[in-house]
Image (tube, rainbow, N blue to C red; front, side):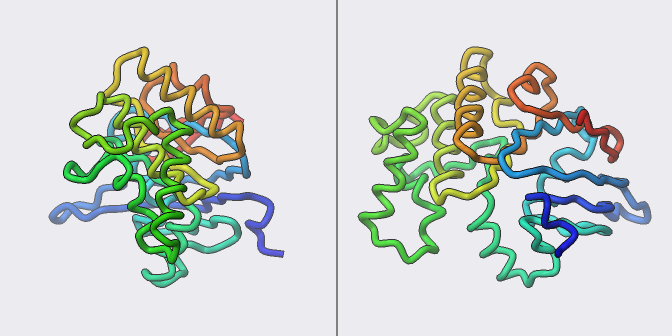
Length: 229
């Protein structure tokens, strides 16, 4: 049996270094932890602690300098670039800090973007996108442009886009960083509901108040981690 088989995600001996002129900067010094199917895990730390780098490494976007990332027993960085892109589209939904919505596309068209590489017919793509928009309470704004929405609504569009192809894992980088307190709570309740429906969520945050929504917190400091579990 693969040694990672008992966990959905296994981070083993990870390090990530960057060259800056003649110097080497360690964004991640050493990290080891596992995440199981259906968990909601917060990764908490101050700016520059390495948490966002960790999320990009976990998501198959940033090759570690050392170590192995197993997702559902697959050694992610042993895959070719093309295989890794296919793997990401099947397994992982991303919510980025700045929403990254396309301004000239409607809400519906933005949510459908991850389906563009699938072989689903246009009608089915529309149905899938409208279904997740209904899930996040925005089906009535499907034909608006992003700049016609509030910040919280744009964040909900980003969530809908991340889950439209039903990935088992959602990676969220400071998903409420630009929102007021009430909207933040609304977004966190949405994420909690998605987790209760079976979605595994890993959320990066610098806000300790948000960690209560997750079942477990991994604290990141100076490129190393300490697990609450």
